[in-house]
Image 1 (cartoon, rainbow, N blue to C red):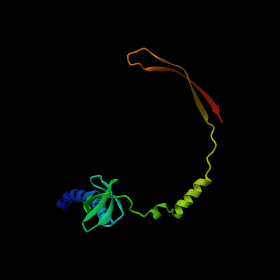
Image 2 (spheres, helix red, strand yellow):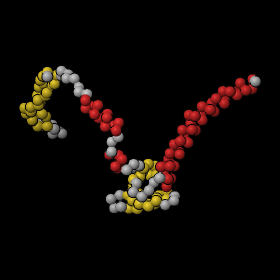
Image 3 (spheres, rainbow, N blue to C red):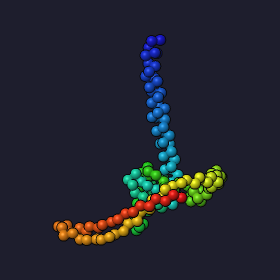
Image 4 (spheres, rainbow, N blue to C red):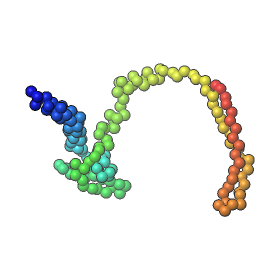
Length: 152
C-alpha cells in the first residue's frame, strides 16, 4: 500500500501533464490538418515562410499558388501552409445573424446622457519668423497660444 501512495504524486503529475500539454496539442494538430486538407483552388493562404498567395491548383500533397503582381506560380507542399485567409465565403461574412441584428437595435435604443464638458480651444498665431544667424541656420518662430474654456 505504501508503494501505491508513493507513486500517487507521479501518476497525478502524468495526468495533469496530459490534460494541460498533450491533449490541447493534439486538438490543435487535428484542426490544422483539417484546415490543410480543406484547401481548394481560389483560397488565399499564407505559407510558413510568410509568402501570401492564392491557390491555383490543389493536388494530393502539393499546391500551386500564385503570388505577386506578375502572378508568379510557385509549387509548395500542403504541410507548408500556415493559415487560410478566406476560410468562409464572402456572402457568409457580410450576412448578419439574428443575434447581431438584435444587439445593434438595442445599442441604438440606448442614448448617452448629456455630460457637461469643458472644451478647450487653442488658437495659434504666428507673430514673426526670423532666421537666426547660427551655424545650422535654423528658423525660429514665435508662437502665441490662447486657450478658451467653454461649458456646454
